[in-house]
Image (cartoon, each protein chain N blue to C red):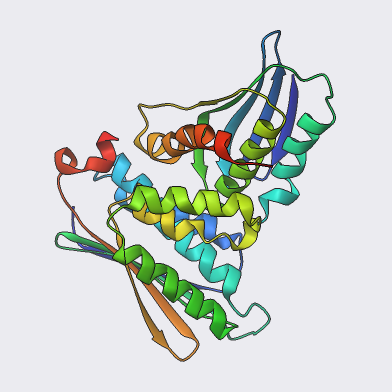
Length: 167
Length: 117
């Protein structure tokens, strides 16, 4: 598969996320359907988080989505302007917690159990836990003021080595 | 059979002799699924006082589900368990994404037995 970059900027509009899902899937399906499904999930969850927490009433607020395939690496990044610093800190803490964990399945199950006792579907932040449990992507972030850039990255390995495809 | 359309999702409800089957077809992409999908699911259970059979959630025709809808399903599973209804999660194990997404929910239904109302 050749190297490519797909970039798009959009206002915090939920309906636009479906276009990104489709484009991400289309870009990667030639390599492997499972791989494309995985990237679609990552792109979707990161964009949904960005739209939920973005400043939606500001005219110049945009979310930047980027999908890169460079050599043996796939990177998905979503950069957005958060309305509340607490939301940035919450997401930062979740990503740090996820990266420290060596048991993504337990982390995900614990999150589900927490969810049923603390019902708040819109703010469940289950997406980040899903990414780490259901895919081979690793999460990272960069913060500049109110701007949060969440980066998901994975190595592009052969289909035979892709344990996601064997689940 | 009753059918419901929510965004890109079609929900079909089959009231069979031995089970109540809810078939999910399409994509779950709602921002607030509790306001549309959730309302339908809870109405099905709460408006039918005579439900005393297994509830099957059939995801085999589903092509995508976001985490907000997974959160909703978890809450719904809890409700089914509180009503002492047997639950079955049905999905296509040949689809890697379905296995990844639904295997954990399948296991999760058993852990709900230990949670008090």
